[in-house]
Length: 273
Image (cartoon, rainbow, N blue to C red; front, side, top):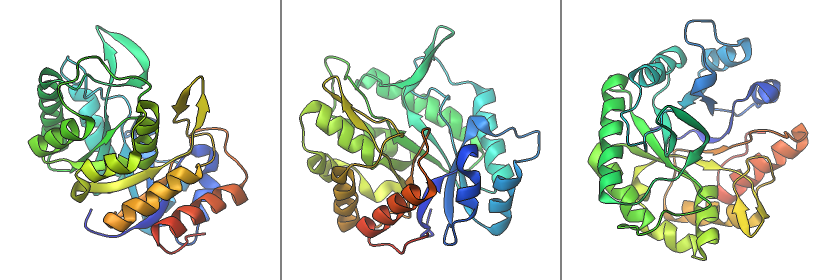
């Protein structure tokens, strides 16, 4: 996206009224699999589109990281979502969610090997063909484990995928924090290695420590360390948009507004509440 959309929040049915009432909202995101392209949009979402709010469909089940070719039907659905929402791009995860007909129910990490990289690039190109020119942004996931014997670092792996496909980067800053913390590494050092010039937009979310690991829950408050990373990121580059992700256990409106204001302050952007 070449336009600056500032700070936004993910559209979910449970907080549709709150999202619709944000006076400065210019950017949101909807889970693509929740959009039924052969039926009218929910009124609250249709009103945002009519207002000119940028609504990006965000896929969670394409399984770009699987060894099997992606489903053409699922890829076509992403395209249909983009057309229905008048979206400037769509996004998906670098992950796999199914194999041999079995659904994992989670976004699972992929091995950082050359073989895996080739499979992802092939699946991304197949998706791009179905998208008919609609740009695609890829999101590296938060992972509780890494596959053994990696041939590339996370930054190298991601950079080669993006360069091999021409895709943008959906950078989840909370995932950067989670992965670095769980590996005992520096999240700021990982930021230094990532291709920040390819950022399409940024996710910001909360999480919690449990069982010796940091879990990217999307149901907890954003920790101060993640907000510090937002500030560090925006000192390096200017993302087109930053978006609060909440996916359950929604707090009162005042708490959501406080999180949006905190993201805006960390990023040096105007508040939207």
